[in-house]
Image (cartoon, rainbow, N blue to C red):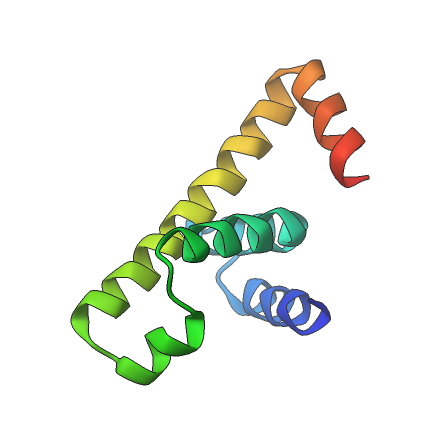
Length: 98
């Protein structure tokens, strides 16, 4: 988890200021535990291991991995928006992750 957070921070600091990629990278760093849980659940849902994706390198496996990353980003962004707009969502997030 520490390595992932460090890589996200490094990637975010090297991207152009104010860009969409930078904002999403920083958001993934901010919600790294939630992102990890979301990605893990999504990969478990496909009933395959991340190493299987890397070792087979087939188009279907890479597509499933890309879908997993996109879903992780969507979940993290949805939680961030919900926390900004709703005190209940913010309190619930803090109860679970703080």
